[in-house]
Amino acid sequence: MAEHTIDEIERAVVGCERCPELRAYCARVAAEKKRAYRDSTYWGKPVPAFGDPQARVMLVGLAPGAHGSNRTGRMFTGDASGDFLFPALHRAGFASAPPALPAGDELELRDCIITAAVRCAPPQNKPTPQQRRRCFPWLLAEFDALARVQVIVGLGSIGTQAAFSTLGERGWLVEPARFAFGHGLEFVARSGKRRITLVASFHPSRQNTNTGKLTVPMFDTIFARANALLRQ
Image (cartoon, rainbow, N blue to C red; front, top):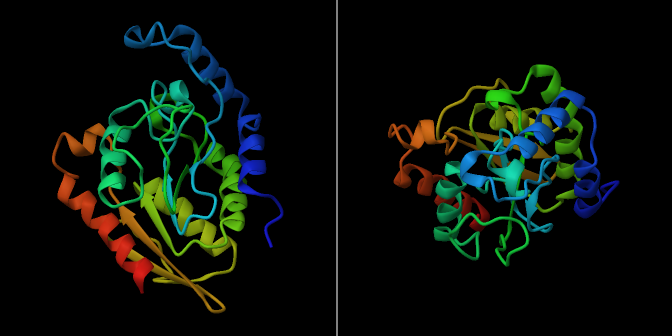
């Protein structure tokens, strides 16, 4: 049984001060703002997971964007990555609407929850190994609280690695046992009678989507696979 509920974990995430340098960076970005968002009130704190606490599908990304989630307070919103992700979730039936909207609206995720390897926006979107280690216990706690998870989608190499490490840390037998990354690559994890499939995807960053490294059909295939796994 999980030690804490998702709601309890996310309240603690928002107050986290394990990385003072990231808290200072997020606060500075929130104060200085981007010209396009100068009239916005930035969140400027660690960003909690967003979605269904009974989810069977768990998405693990990299970290909040400085002017995306760090501004909106909701995972994968406010920037190009979210603009690519949420329509895909909507097409697959996991989101109530396609826009990547900020916290406080009526957007809902169905049977799906979005979290990340790191909860504070890091400079240049590059968290250090130490920052990733400090944040890892939050992902472990969320995994423990999400007792119905059957599919994990890793968004990008770091998100996929964090999910892979979570399964190993919690004693799941993962095959293949050695981590590798590639779009559509799958790992099967077993613990007793439970089975979880980890599916890797390229991150929906502008760098990947604008260059054609990740296309809409490629991304849709990932969530179609998630739905297929839930039906097994």
